[in-house]
Image 1 (spheres, rainbow, N blue to C red):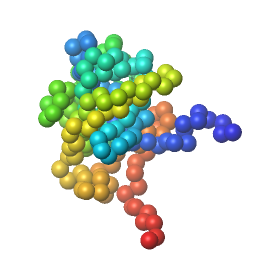
Image 2 (image 1 turned 30 degrees about the vertical axis):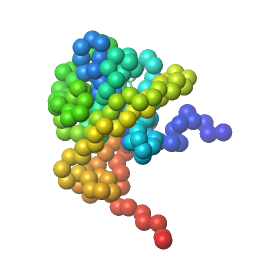
Image 3 (image 1 turned 30 degrees about the horizontal axis):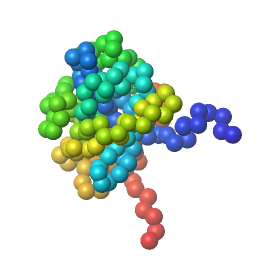
Image 4 (image 1 turned 45 degrees about the vertical axis):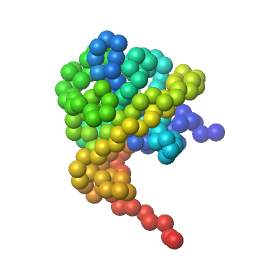
Length: 180
Ligand SMILES: Cc1cc2nc3c(=O)[nH]c(=O)nc-3n(C[C@H](O)[C@H](O)[C@H](O)COP(=O)(O)O)c2cc1C
C-alpha cells in the first residue's frame, strides 16, 4: 500500500480558480485542482468542492461561475486564495485581483487569465465531504496567442499544475510524441 494520501499519485493536476457570486454580495475566488472535463455533448466539466468551502454556499446561491486558468506566475496568489475563506475576507480586494465582466454569465472573470470557462451548474453529485459540481460550459475563451486548436502553446505560456501543499509544477514545453 502506498504510504501517502491516495490521491497524491493522481497529481500534479491543472488548477482552476472558481469565481462565484455569494450571499454576502461578494465575488469569491477559490482554487480547485480536482477538476476534469466530463462530456463533449453537452460540454461539461466537473469540480469537486468541499461542502465546507464558502464557494459551495455561493454556488447554491447563484448557479453560474467562471473557471479561470491563471498563469504559473500566479502560483503565490493561487495558494493564498486557497488558504482563506470568502466567508471571512474579500479575497479579490485583499489580494489585489482585478476582475472583468464575462460575456454569458453574471460572474466576472479574472483579468490576466490564460483561459476562462463560463459555466452554469448542471448536476450535483454528493460524495463524502464534497459536492461534485458538474457544470455546463456556456463559453470558453483563451488569451490571444496563448492557445491554438490543440490547447495551450507551452512554448509561450505555462499553467500551474498543483502537486501537494505549496508545490506547483510547470508543463514541459517539449511534447513526447507517441509512435504511430
Ligand atoms: C492549489 C489548490 C487546489 C485546491 N483544490 C481544491 C479542490 O479541488 N476542491 C476543494 O474543495 N478545495 C480545494 N482547495 C482548497 C480550497 O481552495 C480552500 O479550502 C479555500 O480556502 C476555500 O475557499 P472558500 O471558503 O472561500 O470557498 C485547493 C487549494 C489549493 C491551494
